[in-house]
Length: 73
Image (tube, rainbow, N blue to C red):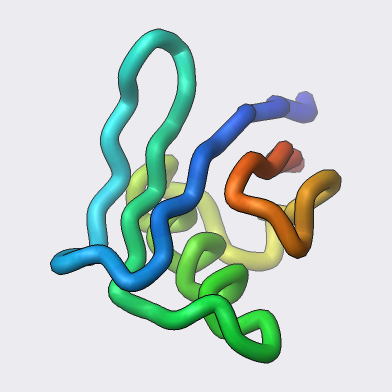
């Protein structure tokens, strides 16, 4: 079953972490948003947080934006 999450990404954060507030997952990554690196870091952090393999997580909307929609298969 597919799950959809709305997330907000904060690049250049002091530490890598995932925080849930008001039904939105906030993903903080120390990575800079260059050449998709932050998106890769986001998928890695979410994979740990949600305890699913990285291959099952996809950014379905907002590749170039802080507000993203994530699909987990």
